[in-house]
Length: 308
Image: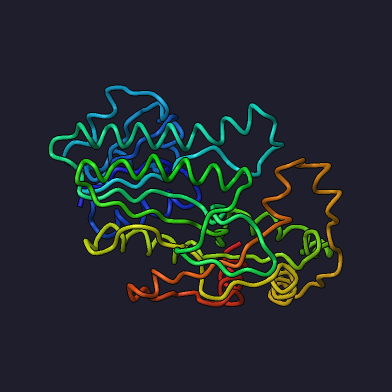
């Protein structure tokens, strides 16, 4: 296959590129920063990897590069919880996803020949937060900021079906791997200062990076897979349990909780990403027969710690 990827230099995208290259597929990387992409993928001179510069929210010559691709994976979007949510930052979070997806859909509509599939990222923030409810792909959306972002993001992606292109939307949970959110939690634990964030009762719906990449590849390859897929492991945990297991794996205590007010001081409204959660189950991946390498959190965390 020849696959175009937006967001290829990120935590998930970089591993997806590696896996596709290992399988002998051609990869076309859409990037705002070609110099960074060449650093992340030093073998860019190889014939099965091509780097194309683009501005995600603007039309341009880059759109012509999608002609002849078999599939497109869109993982691009401004980081959610890296800084406080000022009005400007909220607009950037929304536009990077909404307009970025719109321009990819626009490129697919004019491509000749057209990609047969778009795998578009979304997030389990679609469902809002709850300590008691359980969500699957049929559940209604929430009404907070992240839910609104996901609704508008997915609405743009849905337009690609008008071009006859198959669409799979991957609502991703918190990605566990050597990097990402868990990596930021390792240092305090190793310094004997680890513990749950906030109340500890919030749900942590997670997926190991390898399972997420496998699910994306499955969605690219299988023509019967379309619509919404929850990219979460089948066994979500509460924050308290996650931290207890992480402490066990690191042979460190989990005794120093980070209070709500401290996270609000640091992150403002963005603190909701870690203080509120949702119990999300992957009903449709399981219906498609998807097999998880890491269905439970302890082996997933053991794998992360062994490579950190």
